[in-house]
Image (cartoon, rainbow over all chains, first blue to last red; front, side):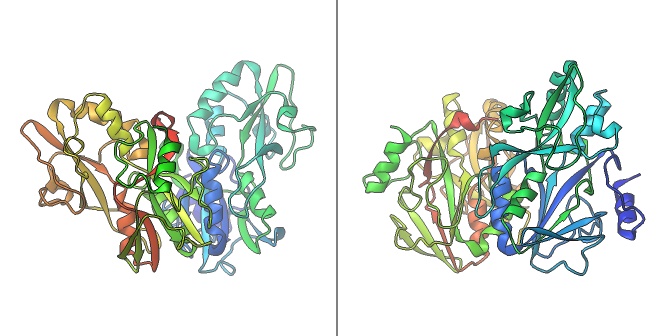
Length: 255
Length: 255
């Protein structure tokens, strides 16, 4: 299916599940929507922490069509939205038509689905995909660079990779600097402050088997976590795994 | 001289001229300072027009030390400032201590001095440097991507390059994507809407001789021109050629 068709099905309510594996060749995006009052600081936070927060589009206040997807509507084209008030998840919604305001600014950030599809194409298996789980994510002891009221730890996603494929996985993901790029850590989780690998902070744990290495990539949950911690009065995000699908292909973003 | 020493001499008032050729190996920056109210839109404008507006640092509201220059003070470390009110140049100042406010946001943008020093090192002569002129700059018919109230034409700088050196000049400047990168146009000025090459919109004309080609690069005056056109109530910039000198070397920014 083409990206436009999937967005249309999401908009009509026909497609409600997560978007992992939907429209494999098209770039999917993390979404953060904030009142303009906080938009400069959030922009600065993303700019300073590009590995975790790779901006691929920023919409002006009140605008809901992305340049990366002609005819799109950010208020309807995501399968599930999370609404936060004062840093707390307050509501899950299928659209945000009623709550979107003229002063809301939308940020689209690159997402690991792009590099995952490239890993799979190259014969590198991903256990969370095979077992249809959400990837395991962890808060680390690596601090991001603060900006205004936004700060917090780098959040990483972990994928067990067969030892003989680790080098290749690095090479492949390095080619996607706008989708988190090369891993930030390889091997011993405790070195980045992860004490219990079996208990991820977000998503679901998958086993790390013999002759596999846990490989950690910067994760798009980082800016969401910073925004929650910043305790701003109102924020809307996509629900984890329920991404915004653009018309750009993965190849458009290869460096 | 080291960058820190030059900044110290600028701060003390000892160094008042333009910074072309001062501290050759250190990166110099264009500077735009705006009230926070306009900072998000300006940030977005720069983000959307990276070739003309390559951001190398953005300071939070009220902050005057850049991460690129430890101990620096953006209020004193530039030889000459321009103060604009409602889009009009109102005042030239040697420092901005008295006028800098808590809500002012500072943007530093890459500058062509970096690639010029690399061209010279490689034996490519630059007439405006030899004749100690400010480089010739032109408004083109290429529109930038608007953002909020910021819009306007791409401004380019022109350097006559010996025909046999044009390819090499492209290769060298391409390596500095944060300092405008490769040329945006080579040859016939009328193709980008420049009708009178002898009459630049900013800077000074230098002759284009036989066996030379005019080569055009995106120019850091672009965002200043957009900000002037946006008619915002208050803005401070460096005076042309009077740059902010960072502690980063040109090599730190080679891609």
